[in-house]
Amino acid sequence: MSDDMINDDDFAGLVSGLRDVAEWRLGQRDGFIARVPETIDVRAIRKAEQMTQADFARTYGFSVAALRDWEQNRRQPERSARILLAMIAREPLTVRRVLKQL
Image (cartoon, rainbow, N blue to C red; front, side, top):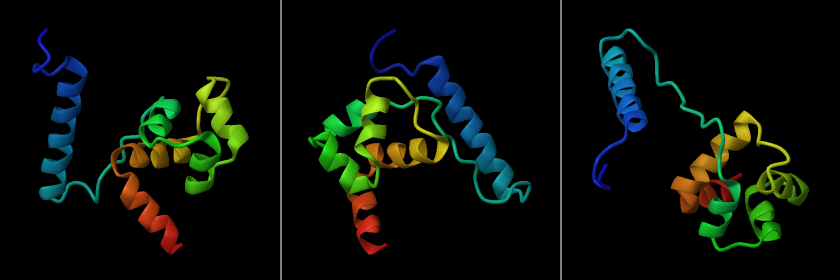
């Protein structure tokens, strides 16, 4: 498969999302359904932010011990932490701006 081709999982996700939108527009669904990743590469997210473990933990409200466990695959983040981490991966500046306002 070439790099510009969509894989089967991504295509299925798009189809599912389009069905959700169609149901919502027809009044058959309230709001949206959060798609929470089962696993998340915490180290890759932190490295993309070019932060140390201590800085990343302090910035986003995690404990350094939890971050270390996640990065070393001793534990997986809980559902709510995976949601926050996915948001950080996509929109880190927005997450930081919102956290500063809390």
